[in-house]
Length: 99
Image (spheres, one colour):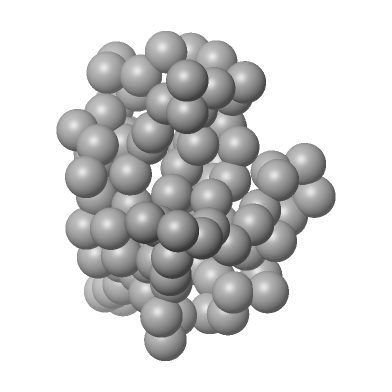
């Protein structure tokens, strides 16, 4: 039986996140970031609505100002995964250091 995997993340700005998502390669991310980032990428990849992305413990919230239209989740003390989400797809996914 042929299994087709549909990817719901359209583009990743951070090289380490891209390697993790596309190849399962954790080597470009610190271990304290990689575990939570991998978990959240899998949530992003399966979510159909924004409500599904509000997972307890991730500090999910909508951003304002220059990043209006983006959402953010916490992956470490200083690091956040930010993204836009439309029609069941995540766009412009990036890992940013807030400090």
